[in-house]
Length: 243
Image 1 (spheres, rainbow, N blue to C red):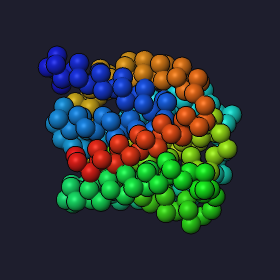
Image 2 (cartoon, rainbow, N blue to C red; image 1 turned 180 degrees about the vertical axis):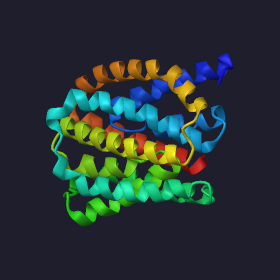
Image 3 (cartoon, one colour; image 1 turned 135 degrees about the vertical axis):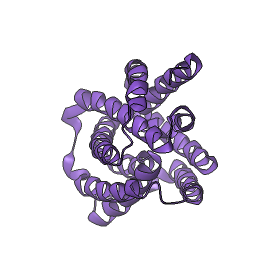
Image 4 (cartoon, rainbow, N blue to C red; image 1 turned 60 degrees about the vertical axis):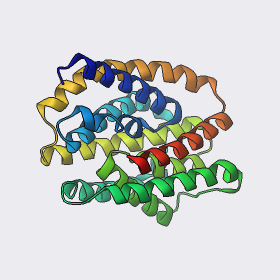
C-alpha cells in the first residue's frame, strides 16, 4: 500500500463509498469491496479494512441522529446478525464463496426490484421471526463479504416511519455489527499493519464523503430516498453476483 496509484484509488473509493452510505444508509462495503481485495494482501484484510472504515462512517451518523434511534426495533436482528457473522468469519478461509455470492446477488436484485415497485404494499413489522431471518442473512453477507447492509435495509426501510428513524437505526445497527466483526477479524489475524496503513490513508476521505452526503440527505424527501435505496440495492445485487 505504498504505490501512489493504489493510494489514490483507495482514497477515491473511500470518498464515494462514504457518500453512498451517508445518503442511502448502506453500501460502503458493497462499493469498496469491488477494489479493496486488489489493494490489500488478502481478502480477509480487505473485509477488515472495509468494516473499520464503514464503522467509522456509521458512528458519525449515529452521533448526529442519536435521538431517532429506536433500539427495540432491531435488538433481536442485531443479536442474530452477530452470531451468524461470527460463524461465517471463522469459516471465511475454509469455504468457496463464489457460488454463494451469485445466489445472494440474485436474491438481492429481485428483492430490491420487487420492493421498488410494490413498496407501498409492503409493511414489515419488527416481529421476532422477521428480525431473525433478516439478521441471519445480514450476518452471512457481513461475515463473508463485508456487505451486511442490504437485508437490514429492506427491513428498516419497510418498518421505519421516516427517513431520520431509518438512517439512525440503520447506522446504529451497522456500527454495532462492525465493532463485533472487527474484534472477530482481529482474533483471526485480519487486522494487520497493511490494514492500519490503508485506514490512515482512507479515513479523511470517509469524513469528506460523510459531510457531502449529509448535505444531500437533508435535501431529499422520504420518497426519493426510498427510490434511491431500492435502485442502489438492485445495482448492488448485480455487483455481488459478478464479483
